[in-house]
Image (cartoon, rainbow, N blue to C red; front, side, top):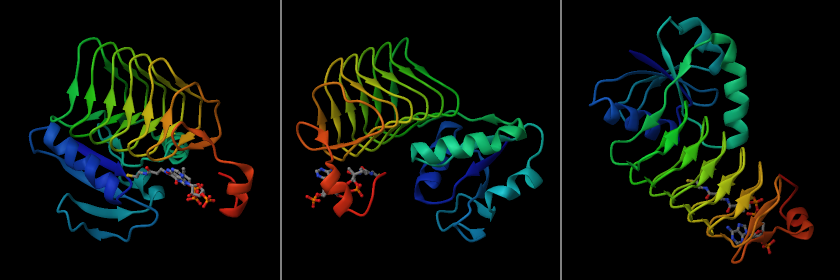
Length: 219
Ligand SMILES: CC(C)(COP(=O)(O)OP(=O)(O)OC[C@H]1O[C@@H](n2cnc3c(N)ncnc32)[C@H](O)[C@@H]1OP(=O)(O)O)[C@@H](O)C(=O)NCCC(=O)NCCS
């Protein structure tokens, strides 16, 4: 089966490598990226064929799409853009990830090497659970949410649609992170945080308007 990988940067290559491992090493990848020049990838995983608009011309019935993008907003945009192709999205789980009983990983999601998803966890479509993340019992990860490497969800935590957890961020038991919120690297969410804002620190607090202005604008 051929796989059309959306994205060709480092993260996309990690996803493709994980899929090859999941399939016992046999995989046929074509990469597409608006910013990476066509040609063979140094990782040896395949070739960049062209920009995302070139996917339609190369797609054949039975091909699967692979989401090689980690940022939630971009994931949502790209999935909407490619919906008209009617191709299925691959669900990628590296064989060195641990998935416990009654845990569900929905279509189009990615679970990386070293991640640990325990029991009764729900991960919605196009969720990203990167290297060495933990999702403990009864955690919910809504569609398009991304956990960057090392992020940890305690039992019963809920990550809203399109929310992004920076590397090594922590969400305490039962805490909800609102939709499209960003929790900065190393932040610890000790109580529920509303959506569409950026939070940093321990305990996590909103990035102030002053800090946002000084940083050159709002996300
Ligand atoms: C929180 C985050 C999104 C903010 O990014 P930004 O909007 O570009 O903000 P800036 O980097 O300009 O920083 C703005 C302020 O927040 C502070 N800040 C930024 N990230 C922080 C963090 N993780 N923890 C504590 N403070 C942080 C900065 O020190 C700065 O404070 P100052 O104005 O007092 O100097 C980003 O820093 C972050 O942590 N992203 C996570 C990315 C990640 O983990 N990627 C993994 C890829 S594998």
